[in-house]
Length: 115
Length: 114
Image (cartoon, rainbow over the protein chains, first blue to last red):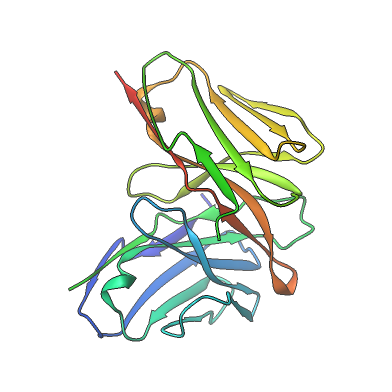
């Protein structure tokens, strides 16, 4: 089945130690998104890629970066994780605007803990 | 900033009863979507209602939309234990570069008691 896969499901890192989360998709969607979801809160959009074009949300900290080497893969890099970055990180994909209001397809997320 | 606000924040009902969740939003919309999130999992798209629609059904789900009041409701009929999850409404967020993101409400945590 076509899907969005996130690895790992659980990630533990130390305060200040860089960490990379990965996402892959078999849907061949143009757009890939990263959301941050803190405990008992709604997901919050960090940034997205439309093909190779990267678009950062205005309030996303500089500590968060992303890479998309090809259509199928997208990475979230946290350069110096702080305690406040502990959260579930969700990857999602969709077709671009104008594609009949297509919904977003989410992976199961990576839960990041900071020691 | 949050576009949608769901109420109630938490809802606990007996299996077999109907569950109703409400969502209010602030700006004009193109469509409104509802997603379900099981504990520790990603979001699953349930249903999308366009701004020119007033009601939509999908299985045991019924969604209504009142654009004059900027509100939507999600009704789950004949609830089951497997319906236990958090439910989020989401509106389209126009992004640069031809893509649309989602702005989520705070969610309703639904618990179905067996």
